[in-house]
Image (cartoon, rainbow, N blue to C red):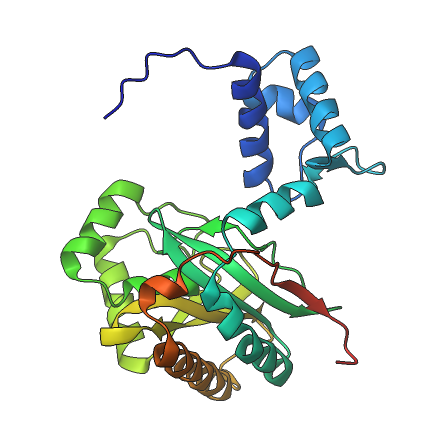
Length: 280
């Protein structure tokens, strides 16, 4: 491993600390909140926020005085991560699934032992769940993540659990390795995973795996709604639509691609973070 002998740039290190704080916030941060959470001088935080805002990486809500990520930062993330051949082939199926279920649909891959969101489709006017293209989420608490790790060999799952841990997001999060294994076994049996308000209270998601060649899981898709939108009554219908869509994507991507081709960036990446009007 290369020795880290070169000194870091203090201002850049402070700026990244601020961005990381904004990343874990659900409603943004005010200047005093950022000063308190980072432990940085108020003058330094303010100067960095002004710089980020002028470059379009963050924006300030005039009403609440809260700072949040700006479009420029999302565009950078979109170029770096979601420029994947897989998302281009999955997009029509995800859009169709969204229109059939009236729920938000996602496509995710596993990267650095996290679920990385690479495409999102939602209708305007539906509840927002704080997801965006490029967002990384825990594998054990999301349907996207569980749909992938349910198919991993036991030693790989144990390695991920040791590396990442089982972070608790709320009282519904599965934080026991034994309970997680039991839940993943149920995922395999029924063909889809459930995030039952485990990552975010009030949100329920169903996830299904995408298989590449040699029956290897390369990604997953999900539908996400409120706990009222995804309930016992419509669970069979929603899960059937989800699994049919996942199978259709799997069949489509196997025909003309190797798994490596599917995960290779486009020469000209394009965003697939789509909000459609109700008239679509």
